[in-house]
Image (tube, rainbow, N blue to C red; front, top):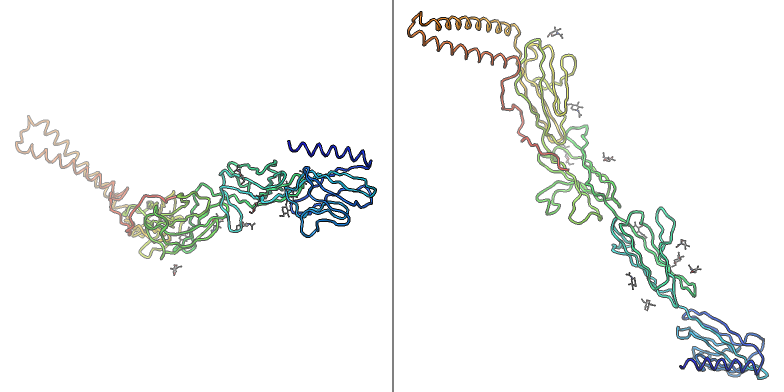
Length: 506
Ligand SMILES: *[C@@H]1O[C@H](CO)[C@@H](O)[C@H](O)[C@H]1NC(C)=O
Ligand SMILES: *[C@@H]1O[C@H](CO)[C@@H](O)[C@H](O)[C@H]1NC(C)=O
Ligand SMILES: *[C@@H]1O[C@H](CO)[C@@H](O)[C@H](O)[C@H]1NC(C)=O
Ligand SMILES: *[C@@H]1O[C@H](CO)[C@@H](O)[C@H](O)[C@H]1NC(C)=O
Ligand SMILES: *[C@@H]1O[C@H](CO)[C@@H](O)[C@H](O)[C@H]1NC(C)=O
Ligand SMILES: *[C@@H]1O[C@H](CO)[C@@H](O)[C@H](O)[C@H]1NC(C)=O
Ligand SMILES: *[C@@H]1O[C@H](CO)[C@@H](O)[C@H](O)[C@H]1NC(C)=O
Ligand SMILES: *[C@@H]1O[C@H](CO)[C@@H](O)[C@H](O)[C@H]1NC(C)=O
Ligand SMILES: *[C@@H]1O[C@H](CO)[C@@H](O)[C@H](O)[C@H]1NC(C)=O
Ligand SMILES: *[C@@H]1O[C@H](CO)[C@@H](O)[C@H](O)[C@H]1NC(C)=O
């Protein structure tokens, strides 16, 4: 009800003015920033100085001043009437906002009225942005992890109102507007955030009346690591007692920290072993020599990265094994024939260099028409052609890896071919004699009702059994001599490494 009165009053005054003086009235809209000085003009139409001016706000006189006493003095009060009748407001406050009326008495006793609308603005201030969940680096840059959901919220305060705008500038894009709306805060979220979302996020608050703007920005990094484990490889060096282990783990951002070390104790309880090398890199290699390597040792490369979920180790490893060449320790060949010696090396980690050597001095075997070397996977075969007595002796299947050298010793016996022929002929003659004897015995037996020999019959049965078993064992003997050495389980390997079939752990 109170507000009605000044409006009515104003209306009345204007009518009175128009009626009394005939001079004009003005209406002015002013905007002032909080804290600024605002000057509200009154009589602006002419060049005369009013003798008396009073300012009314909300029906109440706030200040009055005459040409003789520009009162009150500018020093003490926030509000003052200037010499020309203007209202001076020092350090504007939001409560100064409103409609002001002025009445100036011009020379000739004319009264002039003017209306001034004062709009006070403030801000934007306290513009702040929050991005989360994120980890802050010391320089204020924020880190989020790929595939997480990230919330962005920007707030600020402006009087009377503001427009908020989120903008993004990334490696692949110039700044683009992401969202814009009026209000005290503006939020949005990114689901399954990807590396392309890495960049600078800025929020701008723009006062819709004063058009003043303020902004805040933050750099956002998107970290990620691959799901797979690092890859461990070995590279055999020129010197067989050295080996290079190389570990690579590409696809992590930023670069991971790789570490080469040796497993010790309980891995579940964390890393306890000896560390050979550790570096921030995508690819780390170490060269180790025989004095640092042993059978059964596990060398592991572990990747460290912020984006690896807690409790999930990313690593690869090798379980080192001595070489262990296997094969038959005895071989027999006939003069003039060929023989193939076989050696299998399938346990060595890293893989061994396996070679055939000849004689106690372990001379290298030069492949040619005499010696043919063939490799079928883990099996290394040595074929010796045109065997002579000189070929008899010891052969070595030598297997060397960076850990150790191990040898399989094979003894080759060379048999004279004429002795063999004689043996065959001898066998046939013996078989013939036995056969005839058997027929004779059988004839005698079937005619026993006619020829009675008494005890002689029993002896005949025994003899027959002996003959048959003799033939069987001879047969076996020949087979062993010409085709393969006697079946023997004991390895004559100069080797005390335990064969182990386990594979490298990956
Ligand atoms: C802005 O922040 C300052 C200090 O943090 C505080 O005193 C002031 O009240 C804030 N202004 C607004 C409009 O929230
Ligand atoms: C903050 O530090 C990170 C990592 O050290 C760097 O990549 C980034 O550029 C830095 N940001 C600023 C704004 O200096
Ligand atoms: C955004 O921030 C403002 C000010 O801190 C807060 O009032 C508002 O609730 C926030 N909005 C969301 C969605 O978190
Ligand atoms: C883009 O950046 C330029 C200069 O940095 C700025 O003037 C402009 O307002 C920005 N655009 C958006 C949408 O923020
Ligand atoms: C604020 O917004 C207005 C209108 O939306 C625009 O004309 C003005 O350029 C903006 N000011 C700034 C500093 O961005
Ligand atoms: C953001 O504010 C800074 C001052 O704080 C100003 O120099 C810059 O131009 C502003 N940027 C935008 C896009 O408004
Ligand atoms: C390790 O492997 C990576 C990737 O294959 C390669 O770029 C790097 O040269 C290797 N390092 C050594 C010392 O061989
Ligand atoms: C093996 O490496 C260690 C450490 O690098 C070194 O002290 C040692 O002399 C090396 N041994 C051989 C045989 O190279
Ligand atoms: C294996 O060792 C022999 C010498 O014993 C050498 O000549 C050959 O180059 C080695 N092979 C490999 C693959 O290292
Ligand atoms: C077989 O070896 C003998 C000597 O040991 C040699 O005289 C003969 O020429 C060789 N035969 C073939 C076909 O190589």
